[in-house]
Length: 553
Image (cartoon, rainbow, N blue to C red; front, side, top):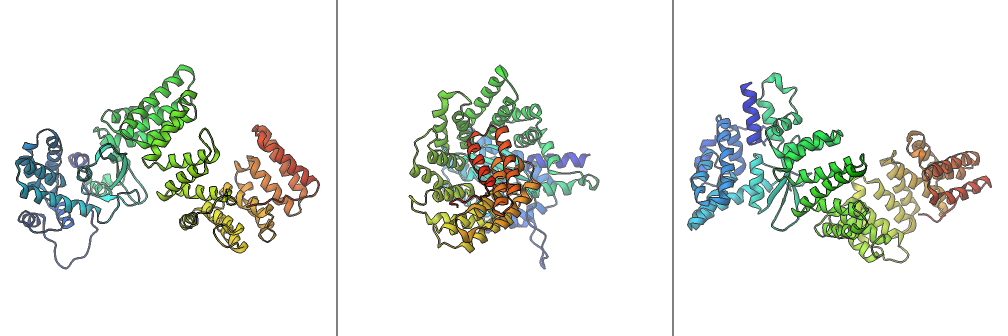
């Protein structure tokens, strides 16, 4: 039990991890005391080697136990007592000479004394540690920074003049234990940074008695940290409980995290209150929505574009009254200006349709392109659709084809479908029925159970006025697959209409009539009056032994 308690404390204080895999070496690597002496004497010791030796040192547990409280003390002194940083910084480096916080503290201390040379030496060390962290990662979700500890993650952000305003833990298939931090520069937007702490998780697991390792998991570690008032862990538990629809329990954890200033907790609390409001009526509903508003406004004050987008959407949709619709559009624009691609995408669609904003193809294109240039795959697909819908009156942007090809390489079936449309009608490329058909079939092969993709491909290949592109047998086969397998698709009037059209195109009008009647019944039960006239026209055609032909794509 003493061992388990000690490990839990180490996890809380440092989340320290061995980062390097074991390698066969013919010469033993220098131990930590040797490297620390060399570094202190001015030798350009490798940061990675110093960290690795520190992790392997025999007295590592004692050192880390002393190190983290001193690093926390130094952070406080940097704000209020810079002249006390000399003793604290020196004590930190005596324990671990590679501490980013220690070098930051001494650089600040010597700056206050006017000792430029000493300050510069410690700033150089800080820069080298930062460069080492950045040497093999980008800090994005797919490439998190590998750091020695959670405290080193925060020191790294300080080195970049960023202020952490919220954090949570997360696990993925590739990273067992990840720290996600929301941080921003002064008056800037909140950005998200990812740190790989999976080594800390593995180190903690290795330190447990063998009998306890089988039951140890990321959730176990997060639970331990949360009960010790780690706000990142509290947010993680809150997110998990929301997913489990255990709203009351989630609320308790998220409130605890929000009291420490964790902006991620504010955003999650707002979403939680929204979810609760859906099940409430009257004053209770209004109160839940007011709680959500309060949390969103707090997060917006801290620069959260995510909160701007969410609250903007609520305002726009009338959740807080018609008087706030314009405020919603303003918030969406504010979020877009801060780089929120969700807001850009929504504004692109709004301007394309003229919904509560000026109808403007130029503004729509601008928002789509901005989001596409930021790498948003949905925006790239939406922009291509936008251009295809207007190909007869708006010049095609060659970037759209390039973006579709990039998304297709990433197995985006809708991008493949749209590439098929480009080749079918010769927009941005030379017209080619064979290439179009290849893309359509590749899209279906990639997502054979995606009813949206299958329906769109099947409709095109069933009713197209391009004779050489029509593939009615193939269209019927893929619709048969989806409609007999997907119960929800079977309730969709549009999908039933496509299925009936495919039967008619293959000469089976009796089945076409039966399925089309099913489509009309479904539309009537859903009060989908907009499509009923079209469905009835198609039924009449089938009853007269006629297939549907349309100018698609």
